[in-house]
Length: 138
Image (tube, helix red, strand yellow):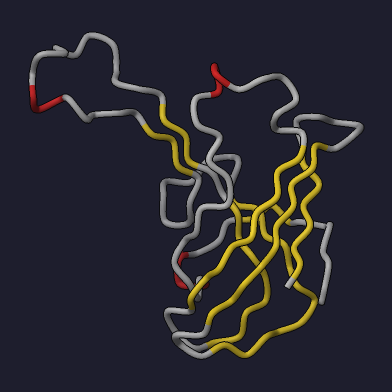
């Protein structure tokens, strides 16, 4: 078991990923969330390796939707599902948020098809509530 609390903000090339993405937290509609409901979030996540390699860490990013752009004809079926989405995922156009990587401190040999279970904890930083302290347990 290795616990990491020193995440790095960096740009992760999609070619570095050994697994597909897995949803850690779905915040839903933020207008419907109560104050403090995002102070701490925990998730058990199970990744499956798509290729062999050495796992060095866990990359985290976010996607958020902003609804349809103003001025679109709501009755036009071609625009029914056109939502504006901001993605900070590897491979998406770069943003200043980049991706957050929690390094494990070891290189774990992985074969395609291996299950990689993790516990991820995000806790608001006590000094800066806009930041989270991240713990990853293997």
